[in-house]
View (cartoon, rainbow, N blue to C red):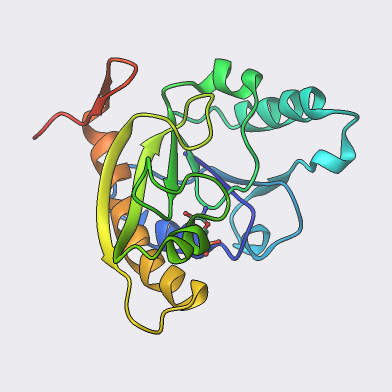
Length: 193
Ligand code: GRF
């Protein structure tokens, strides 16, 4: 798999730790779109910044080519903060997994944790889903709930979500790598063992 990331890269790190002996997937490269901690994982990394390209289409083409060069079976968006373009989706559609820090379809987008807090929900969580052309709209593979506690701020809540998110992502990727995904477009299922 190629892992795309833009941030602190804790999901990437936990996935890299898990992807050892006996795990059915391995990371062939990390792709980033900016200077970030995730770019310093020690794993082979390529960087494709939007600012280095004349427009989004050129960036999309460059990211697609840089990713395809590693011939991945699976793409994992683990805290990648850009919307993937049509070229990328045409090349890898159905094989891109994203993790989101809310129970979709509630709170899509880049501010899921503060949005959930501002709404006053008592339970939020994390969703692992296939990527389609919408923002956090693709078929859901797995979800897990996380309680919102009195006194939570966006940072404490996000950390509690990420603890669950890291484990869920590792489990879902293992299942997808060994058993694949059945998707009818709207719904997705990982066949049971
Ligand atoms: C995760 O919560 C992910 O769902 C969101 O950004 C966070 C990435 O965390 N899109 P990290 O950079 O892996 O620590």
